Image 1 (tube, helix red, strand yellow):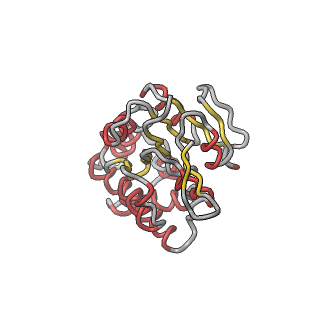
Image 2: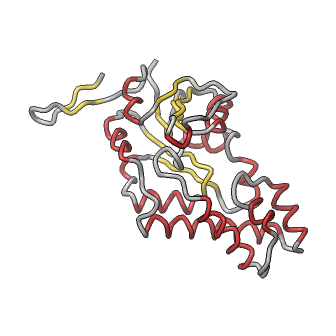
Image 3: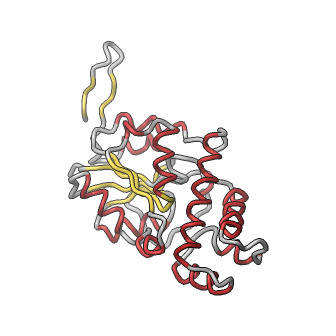
Length: 234
């Protein structure tokens, strides 16, 4: 079998993770944007990571906020904070992203991050030529129901790439589960921040760098020859 496409998570796979302090300040900024100047610390934390629709409704009710307006403010603040980190050189990509140049299958991104952030990643890191499609979330509560481990955005990417078989490369259990639910293979990349992570869901492959993808059966790879830059595909 040969994979029709290789799809990647973004944060922790292509680009380094945003510091928690940055996400915490973005959460505070979201509260301030809707007129809440002194939110409880636990509510700031609740809006940082792994947010569910129930979380948004619960926190919005405490401060008499419109949940849709509040969540749009939160996603906007998170995107702004991460884009600023990139532009200031504090949110870099991994060096081994260069490995993607040699994968001779259509490539895509599926992230739980905001679409605005993913678009900025493509632009800032000059990734656009590497990917035929790239999905983040819309700034809506509904997007929280569709994020990984749900396969919604993964299936959309596969449709864009006209792929029946695909390999999804991620750094979390939700990535592995999303691949399972989409009926495709997964590769868990054990970056340093995942060195001690124990998974309940089993990935198809476990890798340490993006270069390890080249050794996975079914991934078409072309290696540049040293004598003239010609390529031979395996």
